[in-house]
Length: 77
Image (cartoon, rainbow, N blue to C red):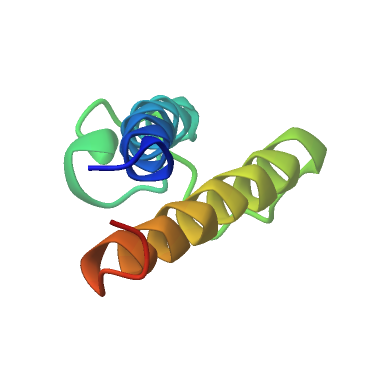
C-alpha cells in the first residue's frame, strides 16, 4: 500500500464523519423519525442556513463518492 492510498483512506474516513455530522445538523422535514415530536414543518421552503448546509452536504457527498470510486476501481494502490 502506497502513501497516496493510505492518505485517501484517511480522507475518506474523515469525510464520512463530517458527512454524518452534517446530515444530523439538518432540520427535520416532517418525515420519518424527525416528525415524531410534531415540530417539523411540512412543505416549508429552504432558508439561507439550510440551503447552505444542503450545498455543503452535497459537496462532501460528491467528494466521498469520487474517493470511493478511485479506491474501489484500484486507480491508486
